[in-house]
Length: 79
Image (cartoon, rainbow, N blue to C red; front, side, top):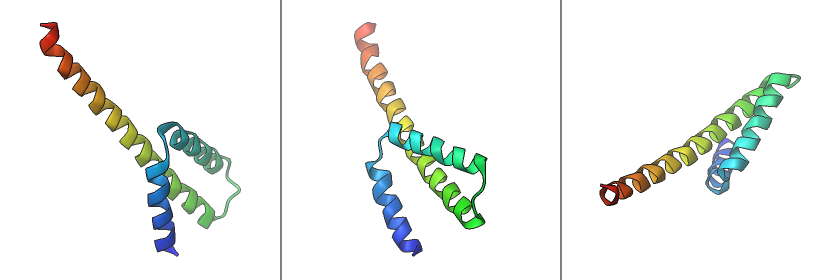
């Protein structure tokens, strides 16, 4: 079962956009803060939240790299 979840996580991680991952992460955090879930459910939510946070970070890192590249490309022209 862990293998199936891992595979599902990989495919959904690849297809989620930043906003989708962020919104789902916010939903997960709200559910965890609200409580009322079993330990197993809470652990599953936590794991999903960790995956979503990684997706968001990867998008942000990519955006930063693109901005840095664009700014570096402009520097020689601007001088």
